[in-house]
Length: 279
Image (cartoon, rainbow, N blue to C red; front, side, top):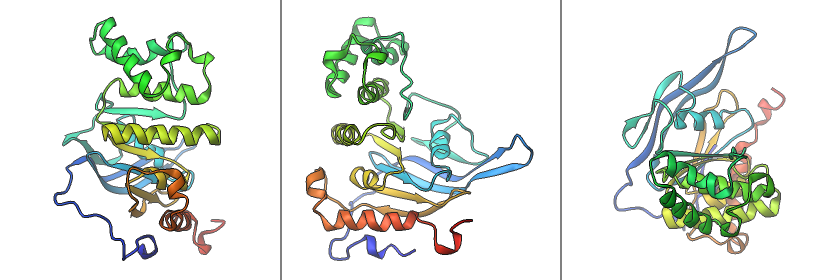
């Protein structure tokens, strides 16, 4: 499908004088799973993608297209069947502190307080209890949870838990955030609030972000580029640069015809062509 409708020739994307170095390089990555009933399942066809340092890239596609599998491969949690991933020029052979995962499941330690959860990473890295808690308190202030440091996860709302999860990941100071539908289980109001919070954090730190989502409007609001994947086996169907000004404000974007055009055209990209319907 042509990309022309997504880019207004009268408003071309800004051209950088020098390309940003790649933070993540995915080269010829495929993934085949063994089926318990016998045989194999090709989840990912060859994927080639470079993500620049400080870039916010979202991955969109129909359910089962391998979005999360690709993210887990970058994280080192799942090995590729073929191909390779490098992060900062180094091959990925397993999880590492340079990549911070934030998943839909909050995965907080239920026996630790909010402060204890966020301080866990620095403590594991060798920081003193006092230093780890100082760092954790600073991060909790950034995500608006200073008043909840003595609470336990069971005492928090879903949105609060996800903010704790984000703060806990940031405490490792990873260069790259790997976010797998982190707001997918939240109510609409909380989801919008956390999108705004995430953008504010990203504007401040400019960490590299790989963000998996099913929500087209969320991807357009957050991203520098959107990778649209096809259904199984997952492959890159199109990469859409999002030429919208930053910092972004939702109330302004909702009135921007370019934002509306991106949402409409990307939704069409994700939809199956008529001949594939029902396949």
